[in-house]
Image (tube, rainbow, N blue to C red):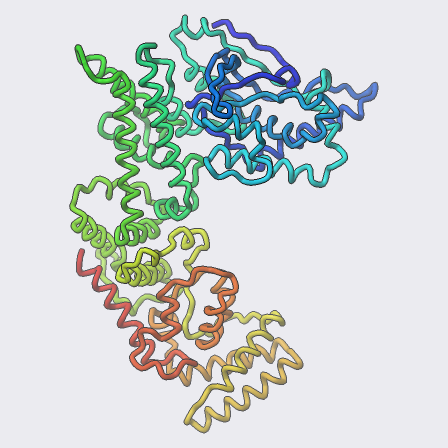
Length: 636
């Protein structure tokens, strides 16, 4: 292959036309990459500006290579089809697009430098309106959310503007540094000849895969996109149909990706620790494993793990296998693009299954619960569920049986496993099991409501970490926080609570009056040691009135689920004060519906007293928990 490799100043590219083919990844540079580039150019500018006899500076700041191939194509500009001659950008569009964005930001001063000549044009094959988007700078004033590429380009422009905000005096010098004839920004220009590609039965996609070495490495999803959507491997007489079909697949790909980018959908299926830039990779992982198990396409040592780009390698082998099968069919009337269609059909089938789960009220809640409680084993659970070929009713029943097996409380002994009682679970020792039970109560409530607008937000459960166990009646902790502002807040709220507290017991009445007096004095003259005494006395009084035993405080009779910030704000307060704090919800967090109901005594038989968590309240609450628990346990 005879390739042209040279260093070119960016100024030489002014007026060029670049074509971004469909197999390319979309624009994805974020704040870090853009800021790094701006800082690198600024650092080079500062070094050039301080040149002296002892300080030798390179005559250019060189970016990583861009790989191009000469090309002619048609594009639509203001509704008019125009023929263009330019360059197919095989690799480097992240860098070239970012420089376009930077030069666009500096457009108001370019008139003093080069009379605002056209920078260069960028034409995305998959974006018919990209010429209008770039020419009219639609990324400048607003974040364009019409598609994922325009969104990231708009965000990139905002990052550039933010970077320059406190550097207004360097804008003209910065522009000169980019476009000057010497001491400038240059690129390594790698030009692949058309004949060199044809002679070696090579293609743009092969070159793209082989030579990419930019700052954002190619993901499996991007490599698979290149593999499936390349157009230069089909005969000319098939080109019109194949081009149209590949456009359709690219459009469907974008639609799937857009849906998976929604946090509500994504975190219904996945943990926060797994968030690839191309979310469709999730579907490819499932398919790659399925194909490899069935056909042994890629072998690897279990100890060493899967090879790099495993999903891409499996897809490549599977596509070749499909093409071999197609070639063996004599006088086939099947379209030449059938192998791609077959693979894409399987991708959509897998996606449609999980999309249906998300949109079915019961499946969403039961499967979402299983995945949320899977301890990072989401992928294997999803594969297992996908493999079940059952009616909708039978499928939901099978998922509920899975839940029953998951939540059953087992106690391991030396040579056996013993089933534990719900009442034996204790805070600190059995937190994992307690969280499972309490989350299931919320799921059960929402499934039975069967209202599409009443869905448990698994994305918030995972992002906000709604996994904190809150004592409904406060515990008496071993260590007491004596930070003055928090203590004063606690004292003020509890003196109000004490004033509303009634008791028929004369001794308790005296204790209430004495505590109110002591708290009023402590608010005026705060003392940490006195606070600890008062704090313990107040808890002791409420525990006495509530008739709660020490053995009950850390059990399911007295626990509810909240997020960590809400847990902190509740500050070990008493029942009535916690209820008000939850109503105010100053952090704006999601409060699980079962927790809301607990503090409104929804499950109590006769909720007359709203100040404390009574013995009757606790029994009614535990009975509800027990009923839901048995409902699932009995299915397994």
